[in-house]
Image (cartoon, rainbow, N blue to C red):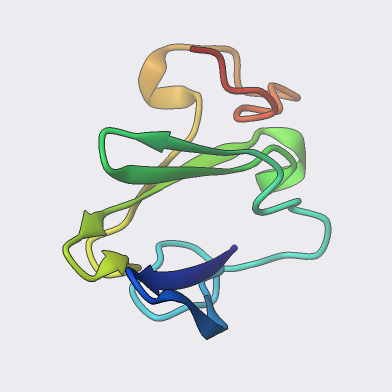
Length: 98
């Protein structure tokens, strides 16, 4: 995901990348995870999915919003297991519904 910071004067010139290998982000990127497939703003935070994480089980990361923008510090991830949802081939995070 790319975080583009802005102000009353416009957007910053460069995006700050945040991914699975960014310090402070739980887990490790694997080929084909599809990290960033879906994103959603949730109460000032950003939710990001990787529906192919762990061979199709899927996972969602939540990145905290701060006064200076979204950060990897304090981010958390979860998959379907803590929600008592099906695990194998769940593609958790493939869609976000409101």
